[in-house]
Image 1: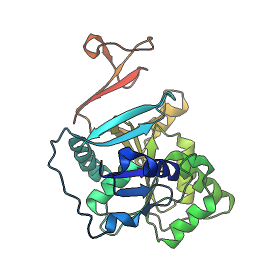
Image 2: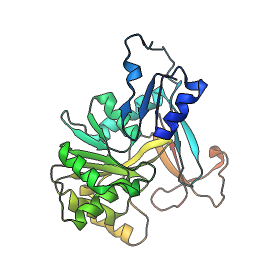
Image 3: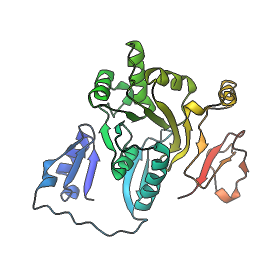
Image 4: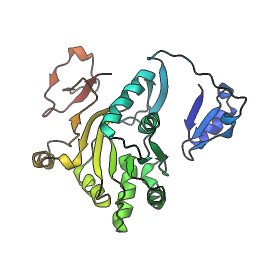
Length: 274
C-alpha cells in the first residue's frame, strides 16, 4: 500500500498501527489535505509494474440492503470505467466540477478535469451545511456538479427556500440508485441553465444506465406516474443487461436462471461486460 484516503479518525488509527508505517501518502477525505511527509525529497516512490487484474482500489459501502460489503477494483476495471465515464459525462477542457463521489473524482483526475471536493458531511450527506456548499459553488466558479442525491437535495432545498438560482452551473450529474422525477424537476428549478443527467448503477458496475432528463418522452413520464417503475435511462457501459425474476432471497447459478423482459419484469439486474 502506498497511500490511504480516509476520515480523520481512520488516519489517526493508521498513524499508530505498525502495519501502516511505510505508507507515506495520507489524504484526509474530510479536509482534502495531503500530509507534507509525502513531499520530503528523500522519499522516492517507485512505480511498480502490475498486471491488469491486480487490485488497485478497495472500497467499502453499506450496500443497497444495508449489509456492509467490500469491492476490489482492478487497474483494468478502473481504466474501463474511466473510458465509459468520459463518454457519458461529456468533459469540457475548462470544466470546474464540485464532486462528492470518489470513483468519479478518480476519473476526473485521470482526464485532468479540475475537481473540488464538496464541503459536505460524509458521515451523513443529508446533514451537510447547505450554506457552505452554495458558497463553494459560487466562490470557486463551479460549472458542473457530480453529487450523490442526498447532498444534491441539501443544496436544492436551501436554494428553493431562499429563492437562489445557480445559473452558472451548466451540467448536473447525480445517481447511484434510480431518482424520482419530482426531485429532478426541483433540481431543474435551482439549475435552470444545466443539462441534468442521472446515472444508474451499483458498486460492482457503474454506470449501467444514464438518462438525460431533457430528453424524457411524454410516454416515459406517464409510465412512471402509472406505477410501472422509476426511469433509469438507456443502457450504457455493459455488453448485455437483463432481469432474473425470482422469489428467492438468494439467487443461485446464473446459467440456471430464466432471463426476462427488461421493460416489464421485476427482479434482479444482471450485467456482463468489462
